[in-house]
Structure formats: structure tokens, C-alpha cells
Image: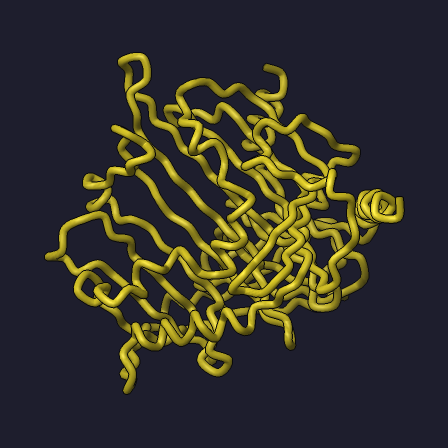
Length: 386
């Protein structure tokens, strides 16, 4: 009974949380005035997390008054005092690093060996156990048209250690709108929530460039990081003469703490022609990318947000279909203490796609840490009427 009450209190706390300090920000480039997307915003007091959309917008919901830190790999990190955020909609301007040239850094150890050490040290430093409160959303496109959307507030209860992670998933609220059909392969209906944190926390997406033969396929370079002198960047690019489907990788790391702060990859268009995945049969992938951003706070080291995109073309009823799945995860809060819950509340399915819609607040507006654009809201509204 106590475990069940703890889970109910979690829901109630989410409702109370939504009653706190609310305002919006729009983040722009100081020189061009253009909006900046994927800016990580962190409350320096409560450590709540937010992320800007493609219009540079973010709705902020603070549990207490706090300065905000704005971070983006292409811009200087910027802290705004809470007293300056006194409008309903606040504009924040960031200074670009575009004018600052990257410099190649020469090291005694090979860049690949440095990367291996970074992974090992990051595994040691990553904070586990921890509860990550996450807003997750997924868009599904067919022939460049959005046909389905799902999102939800999720708690990832991460136990064990970085080498042996056990994750329990508890869904607070969720919604699913639109219609899916046989065009989308069952293996791609959402990213598998039961292993996604394990993949991120164990840096499995860069296994291919850690292999002993990777230097025969990739060029490794270490470069300066213009926005932060404490950071360096490892650029990993496929050797032009080597054929095959190889990704380009960018790993940003803290040179003092020797931990990974951002890791991303994408398959260049020139190499997608060769991509064939066995689980897709005759399908042809035309987009494949991901990005993880991590944060540190004293002894805490944790995932801040992630993005994955996969798009493929496949014949269905003798016609070609282009399918795209776009996944975003924003960590809105975390706690080193795991809360108690009843085992029957654990979500064990692969994704939220087939979970019945259930919500009691408009969590997507202020509890999500991420706000949909007007265009996206119109699409979601239209899908909900189908």
C-alpha cells in the first residue's frame, strides 16, 4: 500500500509542480536575430531542464526562483539572472562561435586512445542510481506528411551501475494521436524505451569507432572548442577511399574532468546509398542521426537531452513509401534517490505508441521542458480529430 501511495504522490507532485513560476523565453543569435533551436536551458538552483524548439522558444516552469544557464555547442554559454526574466516572454541573445576557428590539437596519445579513455572515465563518473524525469515525444511521417504523434512524461528509475544498468519505466501521463498502418515496419515503431538509457549511458552508439580496426576506416582529429576553453572536440570522419555506410562523429569532452559532454553522429548523404539493414529487408534508409547532450553539476553527471532520427524508404503494396521517425527526450528533472513504486506500475512495452492516452494536466505546455511550435500544435490538433 505504501508503495502504491508513493506512486500516486508522484502524480500529485507533478500537478503541484505545474503551479509554480511560469514564463517563456525566445533564444536568438545576437547578430542575426535568428532563433536558435536545441539550446539546453538549466535552472541553476533546482537543476530543472528545458530545450528550445526550432523557433528558439521554451516554456519555463520553475519550482523556485533561479538563474538560468543557456548552452549550445555553437554558442557561448550564457547565464541570465532570474531578476532579468521579469516578462511573460523574455528574449535571450547568444553570441555565436562562427568567427572563431577550430584549431587542430596535437597530442602524444592517439585521438582514438583518448576517446577510449574518455568512455571508460565517463562510465565511472556517470551518476547511477538516479531517477530521470523525462518528457519524450515522437513524430511519424509518411511521404513527408506527419501521420502520428505520441508523447509523455516518464520516469526512468536507473539502478545498478554504468556497466550493469537496470531501468524501470513509470509513465505519469501520455497521449497518442493519429493513425498508423502497415507502411511502418513494426521494428521501427518508436525507439525501445527498455534499452535506450542503457545505450546512452554506456555510449554504445560509438562502439564502431572504438574497435581496433576503426583507424583503417576513419580519420580521428582533436580540435579546440571555441565556446569553452575547458572543452575539446574529437572529430571522426570516414576515410574517403573506404567504401560502406560509415557515420561522421563529433564528441565534445571536458579536457579537465575527461568526460564526454556531447556525442552526435550522422550518416552523410553520399554514403546512404549503400545502407542496407537486415531487419528492414529491402528497405533503404535515407536519414540516420542521433545526438546526446550531458551535463555536470558538482558530483552529478547525467543526460540532459537526446535526439534520434531514422528515415527509410520501403515498398508497400507495390508503391514506395518514405517513413521517418523523429524522437526527442528532454530530462526535466532528476533525483539521486529512487522513489518506491508497485511492480504492476512498471511500463514494459517497447514504446508509448499503443499505450492508451491518459493525462490529467496539459503537461506538454509547461511540464515538458519543450514546447511544440504553432505548426506542430496545429498538426497535433488535426491528428487528434481523426
